[in-house]
Length: 257
Image 1 (tube, rainbow, N blue to C red):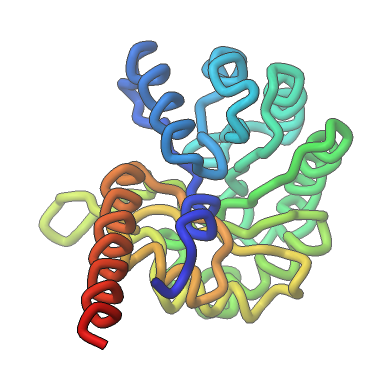
Image 2: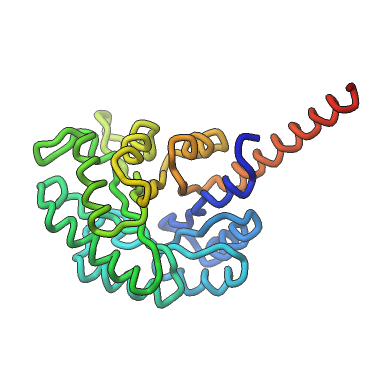
């Protein structure tokens, strides 16, 4: 296999963010994350304390979304939400930028918003992932093309102290010409662009649309260090199947030799 099990499992932030998630589903999701030894669970704020208790001693950390999913909370609310999440046991924070302010070109506001969350999180020893929601940014804004807009956001995030830049929430549904809503989430183009637009000290996280092992491997190939996923079990079970088949093939070759 190209990468070890641990290398790929420790890329996964197991996503427990569905609006209808029940307490039972939260508990089952945490147990699954521990079973597969992923990097973290990514949760809504109210669930952090319970998850931290369930995952204590497992090596799986707790992440919490802030201003999720549309980034519209005031900066002070995002800062306070971060403080509470960290006190409850979160050691990673996934915040959503204020998209309207970014598209308006109010870059100072956007940077202050990100910096406030980074300062609050870092004060508790937590790290921050900043979510762009790229599906909303394909046409660009504030006089910039879509790609230049994303590059500008990467630069702002790095100045503000972000530890990761992140493609999407997984809930950035865009209205289509037929009236339906859909999203792409993480694309190879955006992952490569974001990796090239930050220094090595800022990592890149994919979210939305990565649903199988090959997709996870491609994220790593493109320089992503984390990937939000709900298909965690399917991805890692497939890894074990391929690993077993590879070992069996090697054994046959050895016997034949």
